[in-house]
Image (cartoon, rainbow, N blue to C red; front, side, top):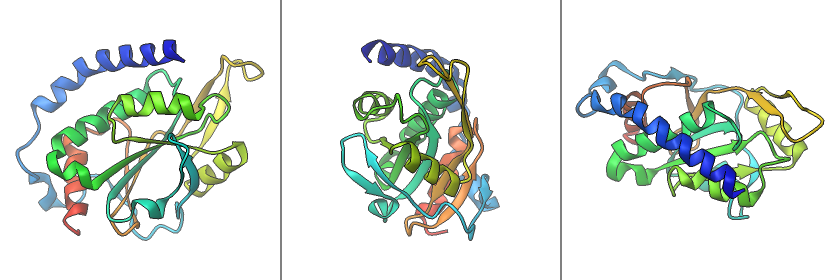
Length: 206
């Protein structure tokens, strides 16, 4: 477990260097907001209604627990070699750019690898990117049900009979407004400053 965390933090440090170029060209204020949302607007979608999972502290959680905040939700797993740490690092930069508004945003990470991603492992991994981030998990059947509701694909690859497998999975991020309504779908690799602009619009009641 400690070795995995060290590897994750090493990846975090390496990715930080690459991300520096993104933050250097951030536009001032929320200039992109006047053109509307940069991410895909899925307001009114009849899926991704919510979840009943456990967080990395052992507390039962549902989407309603975060009412009043903008919520971003990403499905991944702790042993993911690139996509997941890239996403979490990017969201950590989003929180930094939001400044005081970050207190009105909740970043959630739902594992699609419940066999290996224990509560203790999620508690080490997810907050390592930002202490405000929350890891969520369920048993295999609950994970599958939540993934279906969110139209998220995931499938083991490689050593599927052992513990050295990888997991292919959807890579986008869902965003809910402070009223708990599904509003946006953010593609993987989107620049932090673009996401910041969209989140500020939602925080302003757009």
